Image 1: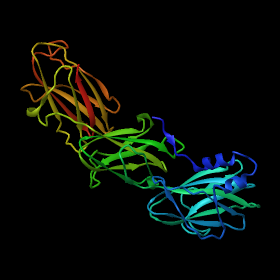
Image 2 (image 1 turned 120 degrees about the vertical axis):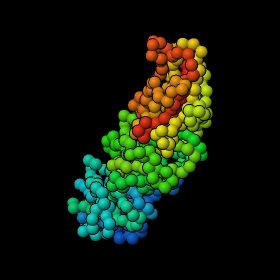
Image 3 (image 1 turned 180 degrees about the vertical axis):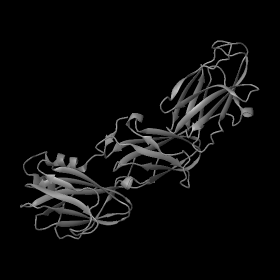
Length: 380
């Protein structure tokens, strides 16, 4: 999966400014709102998940007038400050601070705007809602002007199936994303967008409605896994817990309903016939000993093969085991995981080569370790 970089509004500004090199001031004036150096107007950060317009502002300052602009965030999250230098001779600094004073602590890393680096995106994570302050300053002579916009991604929220949600895990802490499913099926969780300059990884696990883990410990989701993992679920409300060093990310949880026809015990096993296919879900909340049961019967010695494909989490996988009627011990099994999600199984009876002897057989699909997810099994 190609991972998308979170678009910088500075790039949008740059495209406007470079349409006609001459007359930059007049072109940009139509797109930005000028703030006075002594202005106390507060800018409200716009949620990246809303449809609200993100305004572009501009501010003028020099080495004698360090300027503070109050910016408000309504909940814990990460600010995304897009910056574009307009008028500059040498360079200027932009920081986010807890208070409008030179001695106040900075939040995150500041940015330096200069002729060689006129554009930047600054990310700054905060653990509480409130008002913070953008500081614009320079130590060199001349008048400087910088355009900027203020948006944010919240630390957690409610997901809609199939819709990308922009979130953050401030300072590597856990953020929770709520999603409700209508029945048995699976969740495909992906991270299609990133703010990181590198290839980040995400620590993910599935929680129940009380935010208690039902999928074991955190699993790592990263580039070699296509930034994708899966969870088997029943009907209900769940939370996806996410930790990462990526300052901001887009995540998507897509729910797919699966109708299955399996037995919950060996005595309730459902029949599977040659050329027949069975689909099912092993949920994250299931015990390691429970599973889905099927049975088949052959009247003569023959070769039996099953093709299997799975969509699983990486904290284990799914195991398919075979039992002869009257025996409580599996005579063969094969495991599938996110690393080996599909394959062919050919059970056989000792002394019959690669064939099964006549009789009735049972098939059990269950989790191993903390694995869970979707499977499809076909008798070839």
